[in-house]
Image 1 (cartoon, helix red, strand yellow):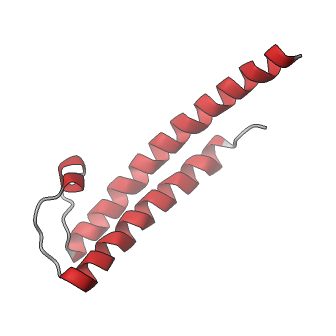
Image 2 (cartoon, one colour):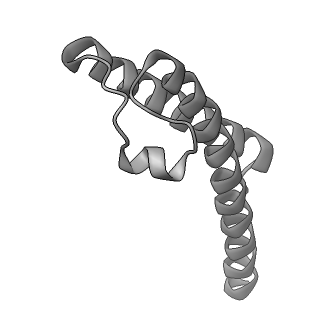
Length: 88
């Protein structure tokens, strides 16, 4: 089975971006916006637990998920092709 690289990477980007966005708002709702630096804030420049930080994190996480999803799908297709040629 072969993965569609564009579809898989777009899905990974959307899931990671929206996941970080929703998690940020979850923390804001229950704990309040702190704006303190976090581990993810060190990786994603400009991200903090705040309203504006959630949108910055959404963009960074979407791009990150897109890249990682594309790499994963390409590697999967490459290894899948090698495995199927060895079986025949």
